[in-house]
Image (cartoon, rainbow, N blue to C red; front, side):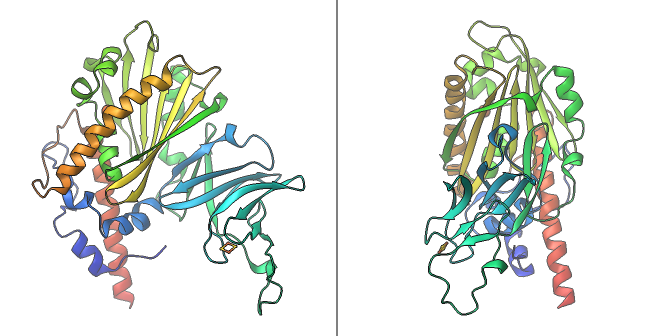
Length: 371
Ligand code: FES
Ligand SMILES: [Fe+2]
């Protein structure tokens, strides 16, 4: 991952207050951080490379030979399962950067490049490369896919590209006892389906919106009817936050119990209801475009109307996020005051971003000093 230069960082952060903001009186990050431009590459190396991101669930890799494709901050990765356990690799062909995809042949699974059919094994090693024998210096045994680090929590598999500031265990501290208390066993769930949405907004616009229930009464009338807005709480931990609300019992809805909405910095969301987990991964595409992948997991059969209900709420969120993004791009707005109680999750997220931006500057200054 290339490190952004000091000059690039100083100009990108010219109008950003990088110092930590006390919760009461905090202002949102300025609009310039949400537009297309150098911030996309800066965040790729500063935010996405160093932090744990969800790549999948054990139930998607139930047998040796299974391969799961995912994306880590703009990099396609492949998670493989073999007798050696789970391993993760860059899914970028070492020939001329072609895309790799899972393939089956001769009773084995492997990764094959769609471009010129080079093939790689479950341990990342090159297996074959058509018609390459005559190339001077070609040494099949020296070609491997770069590996990524993986870690697992309650059946959820996370990956990261570089060593970062915290272990997955530290990031998710307090989550396991909370799940146990509420009777949720995430590792027992099975993958059901994926729905992807490409949205015309910066990835942070979508995350900010996820992190507050302030908009629920105004944007989500149906959701508001089943959540108890008055009891809606946000709890902050170092690397994650939790929004929760008792479910108002209602026919056709989710019954009684508690809705838990975990956000794990920088882009993972776990939406947990009795017998159901929906994960969201927010993937930056460009400065003003992102993809959100929804994966649905259930204990047994899918909950009735779960997908239809999720689609309605998501549609409402997409419309408001795209409207906000148009306004962020309009030049009319710079930054605004956050609500200290209803937007504490947004503040928490933006403080983690500020810390990463400061870290990027610190590293660039160190490099400048050593040059
Ligand atoms: S780029 Fe992969 S085989 Fe050519
Ligand atoms: Fe929403």
